[in-house]
Length: 212
Image 1 (cartoon, rainbow, N blue to C red):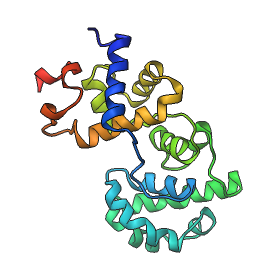
Image 2 (tube, one colour):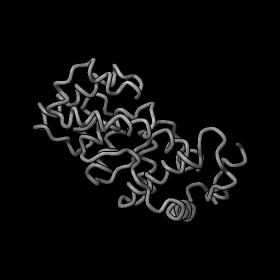
Image 3 (cartoon, helix red, strand yellow):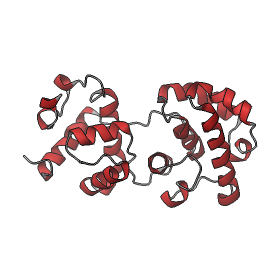
Image 4 (cartoon, rainbow, N blue to C red):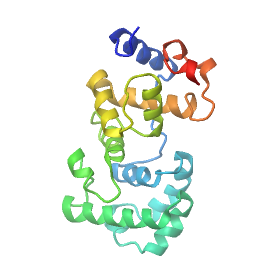
C-alpha cells in the first residue's frame, strides 16, 4: 500500500482517533492573548514548564495593555524558567505593543496579521487560530514533523511545506483534531529517542518501523 493511498491515510487517522479521542491543548489559557503568550514562551521549553509560569505572569500582566508597559527585568524574572528569557521578554513586550497599536488591544484572528507580530511564526499563529479562535489550522512543530515524515505523509523537512502536505490530505474540518493527534502521538508514542513502536497503533502502517 503506497504512502499516498487514500485508504492508508484514512486508516492512520481512524486509528489515531481511537487512541487519542480528545486531543486537548496542553497549555493552560483563558483567552487568545494568554494562549499567544504561552505559545511564544513554549518555544524550546515544555508545556508543563510554561503552565507553572503563566499563572503569576497573567496575574501581573493580564492583557496586552499591561504587558506592553512591562519592564524587561520584571518580565525576565517571571519567565526565567522558560529559557531564552531575555529574547522572549522583548518578544512579549513587542507583540503586546503591536496588538495595542494595530489591533485595538485584540489578538488578530488571521494568519496574515498574526505572523506580523514579533516572535510569531506560522506554527504559533496556527496554534492561536485553532485553539484560540477555532479556525481550521494545523500547527507543525517538531513532533508533527517527525510523525508525518515517519509515516510518509510528507517528504519535506520544511514546516510550511509539511503544513501544505497535511492540509492537502486531511479534510479541512479535521485539521485541528488531526493535527492535535499527530502532535500528541509524537509527544508520547513516536518520541524522538526510542519510539514506542511495539505499542504503537500505527506500527503496521509505518514505513519507518523497520529502519529504526
